[in-house]
Length: 417
Image (cartoon, rainbow, N blue to C red; front, side, top):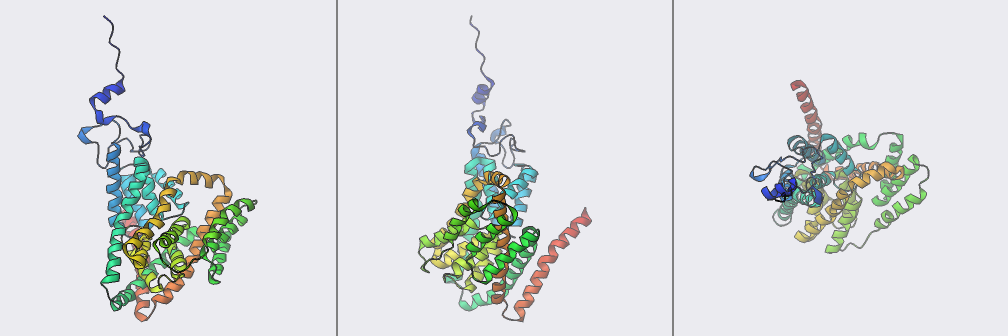
């Protein structure tokens, strides 16, 4: 009698547990078994008591949507708070990535334009479930804030009276100015690290004071940073500067949908650093075109700051003010759209910046210049915010609380530890 050929172990597993065939060969598994926690069933587990391999792609996508959708609902406090929440849930609770890998991803997202915390949601989603996870992570993190801001925009436009809005603004705007000033204080240590950064910041301030377009200012200070930090960069910088100089041109102050989309697409494609840098671009591209008044910009900033999710949903409020729900949708898609591309390319960007001193110096100059431009916008906001002694008192009290609370928490942790 002929011997029965042995059945490979992989086929036996497939026959016994058809839902447990390992999918790592398909490339869709962002949480590959080589990454910490990638092969275990965390945050949702493996159905039916399965213990071999990792969860199915569908399970991982559900995990991504649930996690970042919930963070989009509760994520108040700006990008730093968002990233801290992600670290707690992704590294400590679920083990999708290691602490070192998480830190590298944060650094990579800081090297590309766009909202850093949103790009972290996309990058972590991609790590867990491939390109589908990237889309799911970004969309689920943005959507709750989009819906909340649209609701506020509707109330603002159709329910509240001008007098009520003015009363709210009188108390809220000084708090926003205090928040932005504190953000500048914290960002200064990372943006201005040596004398050359100081020169770059001074150039950006001068350019803003003499009304040079903001995109052109950033292009110039990026080139200046390269000149200070690299030797031969003329040819490379020419190719980098050309699209920025073209993008700095203005258009007519008519606001059709396509123009709203293009303006916010431009902003989302070039904005570096903290979400607060968005104020610089909105002041130049939206207020400067006469689309909204400085008062409406202050209201938009307030809404973006005090609602959960990305600060960039300030653009959603502006879009609603310009063209209702359609304007909110195209503004949101325009400003966040480039981030999906950048989040998919963060690995290559990191490798490029490490190999190219020119590119790294240019990005550093742009980041420093962006922080300097925030100073000019902050002065304008303060001029609009302080309309009486009560607004100044609100500002001082808010700034004191903002500075004191983190220090109190650190002291409390030290005592407990």
